[in-house]
Length: 279
Image (cartoon, rainbow, N blue to C red; front, side, top):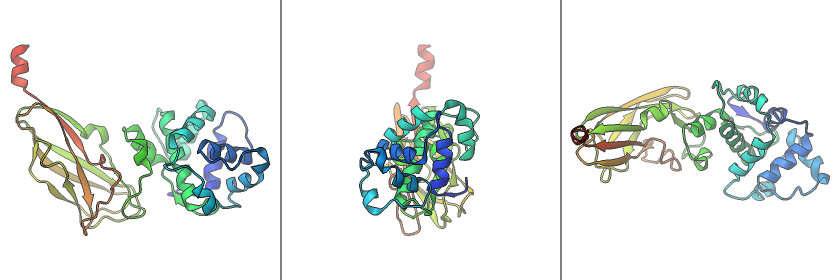
């Protein structure tokens, strides 16, 4: 797959992964039904559904309005889980540039569902949508909430991901320990990052201290990764503290308003001296 995708390429790839053969019309009608769309009630509607599947007919504005909101990502994913042949999952993953040795079928099915709704948004046919299957899979595998996977950024086509993921999101530290927190932030979208910065949203509530509460993000082109480092002081209160940050553009706009978790990390602070004495 390329950086963009059309509904025919998506449908052909997903349909081939099913355990049993299915016509284009039936496939698309059942996908619509699993998505909460109830206007293809019978097989008599399969001709139009087939044309949506092969890209010769669009998903009209009225049809788009017929899908329940928020989109039924989990319900459609459940449909895919039931129909995709597990033996074909590696081939399916490879088609969408997912190279993990072990593929989480729940995550890839949710990523496929998110992609379908991205294609619905652009109206199907020959309209291209961003190919988000691989990036969505990574986010879900790393613990992201499914509701954030197709969250709209402030700038169309903008997308970010933390390359070092879970490894950098939680720390266990003793009183007054100091350490570096590193974000490796990949520009996963199409928008060059210029004059951006990270801003802490929890300065007053997190107890832990950082050496800065605003820090510049290096200019980063699509496909590149920026490194941002801050120093953290655990301080002397026992608890688990979450430090939440956002990325702002040069005008102060929150670049990813629906992804508040994206740049956050947690620190569990404990009195290690007392623990040592009790041991």
